[in-house]
Every structure is written in C-alpha cells, then in structure tokens.
Image (cartoon, rainbow, N blue to C red):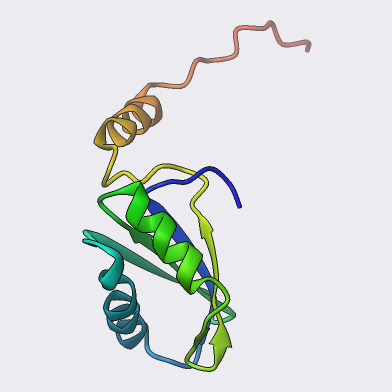
Length: 115
C-alpha cells in the first residue's frame, strides 16, 4: 500500500476515453472526499492512461483510496496507490531543491586519460 501521501496514483484507466473527459470524471468522483488542487493525466504511448490526484489533506487521500480502490470506472477496475514521491503542489520546496540540483554544472571527470 505504501506510506500515505497527499497524492494518489491511479492506473488501469480506459485508454479509449478522451483525457479531458477522464480528468473531469475523476474530479467529480474524487472531490467528494476533499479539495483537489491538482490532477495530472498521462497517456503512456497510447497503451496506458495514468492519473495523479492531489488532495490538500492526507486524510482525504486515504479515505478516497480506501473507498474507491478496485472500483469499476468506465468499465475498468481502478488500481489506486499512494504516490511514491510527494507532490510538488503540496511541497514546493522539493521542486526548488530538484531544480537547483538539476541546474548545477556537472563536475568534470579529472582523472587522467590513458593515451
């Protein structure tokens, strides 16, 4: 199940339904558990459709996962897990930290070359 987090990872969504419609329907379904500031949809090369749904409170995310995991949604059984990483929405410092790490110049290899 993983450690509870603000963000839920939802997979096994119907790839034949438009992403905008899935996003709207997911919002309508999940918002009954609490405020949702962000939903990110991903289409993995036409094969898999995934969603990351962020709640403002971990308790809301936990309740939604408990009640909706394995529920039929557009004819498919949703698989809902807690996200492995914290959401940038709920932890902006993590995004700044990542951006700083990525913007640092890479150290050059100072080992002598063998010619």
